[in-house]
Image (cartoon, rainbow, N blue to C red; front, side):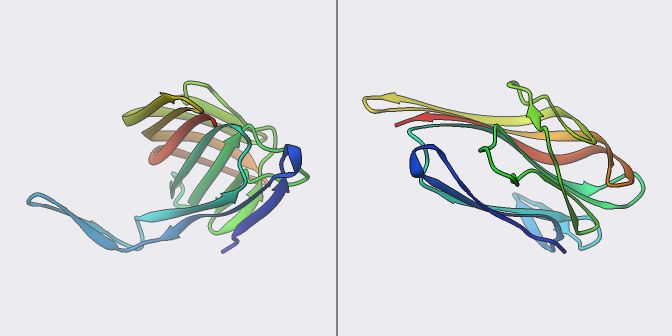
Length: 177
């Protein structure tokens, strides 16, 4: 499958490197109390997101990562970030059965409930969330993670796919330091 790695300049001479890979098969199990949840290769998928950067003094982004199967059985992975640095290639991508397709014109709603890109319309129903706030001298930080059930219509690169109720995560990040 296709990985996606991008290194882009940020304003004031800083840099951001990110490596994404979505919808790879995972196996394993989780035990919660007396409940055991098994993850099988054909129905369980993971996503990888590694970023290293010399962040701007005010860093802001909204991010969505989703992976699962479409209604037709295609393995789908989605990675969206808004806003993205001005660069010829962004970290916005869609994976269909391991083949990466770059996405343009990404917009994620401030409440994280929906997003769009060329060839993609995505909706999220919130399932659970956690939020952090910090306001102390020299640092102001706001972070919100939402686990959601995502539905999407995909029509890009000649593909037509739909996902419905696929689990994913959305993040709203805003930090001054």
